[in-house]
Length: 579
Ligand code: HC0
Ligand code: SF4
Image (cartoon, rainbow, N blue to C red; front, side, top):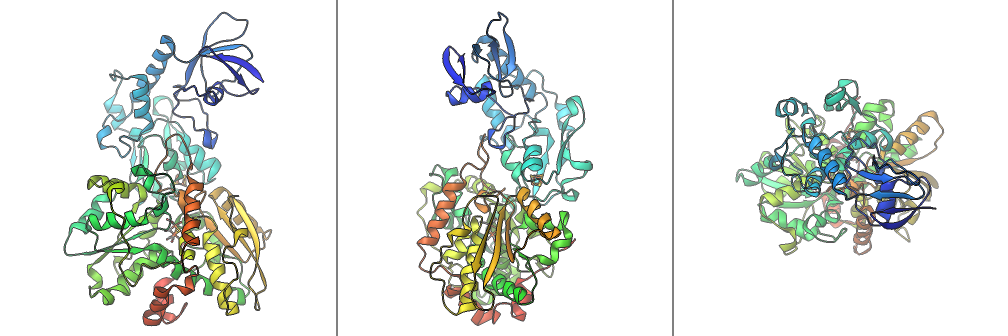
């Protein structure tokens, strides 16, 4: 170990540990902006983590960035001297020189790492702000999902790193020189025409409002407040376990009842559950998979994650025939809300508007896909990320904590099983599918529905599942995060992977940590495990845990769809992909 002092306190460090890392372990705060430990990112470009050091045996003080300077034996580090504080303040002021000054209109207002820094250094004025240069910067609004506002970029490059090294999409680059050096899409493309798949991981790590989703809270309000329309809201499996913390509840709290109450309070007419549609998806995808297995077609990839669909279409179009044709739960629910529900509710189809609340940015892309429309009318009218839903509630003056939890009351499309609930975490779709496929093949239920061999957190997990009947053992894989997905897809294409069924979720962790989830400052995906635990708990405490035993699903097939993969089910609940 290495001995040194930081602010007069004796500290021990590992060899080659950075000063910043050592200080953190000893609970000494050094401000940082570009650095993000969770993704191993220390570019040293913001220079806010500057500290004063005196190396052993030398008299001269030096000023260094602590995030990328290693400790030295006998080193004396100061983080709070007047000189250090003045230099940190100057750095923040320089960062503000070309950063838009209209915090009140920014989506990150009150939740911004740059604002935190300005407070920390006691910034009182902004002597260097260059309005003209800042306002001339690019705002890319080409994508239905994401907005890239370079007037708020602080060049931390976290987005570039997460996209390149974690998701391995590598859509983002630094371009330009000097003061014009900023993040852009590779080859100068706009977001919409680039290789970006809208997974939203870059948004989760952005410290400011430079990256964010397209805000559609106004569009949602337009529909909710218009008495002409019957507004239907659906919310995703993961939303109920990844929302309470925004209102001060412990991470992982199940706020399903609060979300229902909040929707009613803002004037939504019908609250439905995406979990119900997840059960329907299992019926369709499960039977589809069996058909494919019978025909010797393998592997089959799941199709419910829209960033994965984007990834396949943009990066590996040759594998599109391997994707299940079943629509995602979001689109299944929206379709049924506009075909099955009108008669049940006595409301004409054209008067129904579907708003979905998703922990996902790519769901916004999905909603505008031309093949997911009924004539000219999109199936899903508005997608709000979890972040936007929080914004919407604040706009309406609602604090989730103050609400009395409520129950679903729609008798057609709100009941769900444990299988539908676990869709929200990696491995959940596979587990839900196996529970139903097993019963279809064998005419009896799986003895133990908790398929723990499918659970876990490794990027790629594989297992063999005995389906019984003519199928016997089938090989399955579950993959989350696009870095691991790319490697797995390459193996499938080269014939080096032999699987029957593969679940892909583009976001590390699955939807519980989706790119549309609440952001955490200075952290990437810190709440995954707490959220996942709650999801498994929902499953454990559900009376019915297999999709095919969902009474509302049975009614849907009996009254409306005939049978899974029937002609009508095919027409309404399946889709196709485009290169
Ligand atoms: Fe997901 Fe979904 S599980 S993608 O991760 O399949 O967003 O939560 O809503 O559609 O159900 C997200 C979550 C969903 C869909 C479902 C699937
Ligand atoms: Fe990369 Fe995903 Fe961000 Fe697109 S949304 S730039 S793919 S991290």
